[in-house]
Length: 361
Image (cartoon, rainbow, N blue to C red):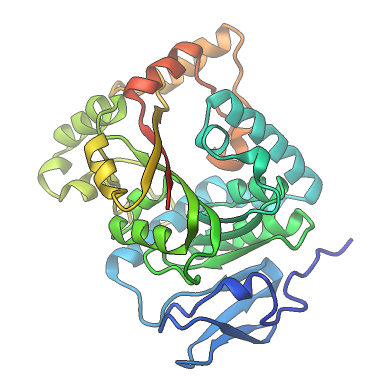
């Protein structure tokens, strides 16, 4: 059976095209002249469409900076490490199975995508995911009935997301290559903006949050995860390694934290350029333009310390007591995931690595 082509009848009346504005001049309305391009009637900018992968590139002309280039190189490298092989073999049936397993994993982990995100009330909602990664979260929300617009700055991740949205078989999701600091959407068009562990890796996180506010409808909800400064991961893992390696003394904070988080390059030489961490005070300042509904910490594991092979030891102990890794981790972590114990979940509320934030415009 052939894969449906969501761009076969793309026109200005397309509900996704109708959401857009030109990222170069910020004029509302892009024209779909054909299946391969969108263009701006105000400034003449042209943006390529990739119908085969359900993806559109909406990057501002001449927007690249050295840091943005490194961000794309690094996260493209990580995509190839963790997701490329699985994505290459996905079918509609296997994706549906993986998403079912992912939902169960998120429930067990008390993850942002199920604890803060209203997954049981997404049908018909307009949802934007910023930083879609390989696309599992966007696919999960589309599977629950949302109209999903997914953006990422990294080309490989946009393609991976677009393919998953298409495999679900309904024309209810699109993937866009875009910069979170300059979103290609009109003012006030989304019911929910969701972003899981992404905006703290951007060149200008404050600009990203301002864009989240701009594209939300009045009363709209943002569901966002950012890293916590006062956490076991930061003080008992990252900081000790930064001192021992000397990274702490060579770079500004966001850069030395970046170099020590998210892994190491395999296909290139660029390390993670930026990671920011936030105290509660810093977080409330960042979201000062919103009404803060809830802040919840999560994500503690007993391997959150700078001790060699502690992850392997934790996993071995949990397997020995009958807790095998959960297959739901494949889509989002690139491997089965060892779910936290009840004690770890409790400790996560106090010294967890993740701030789970819900704010309203």
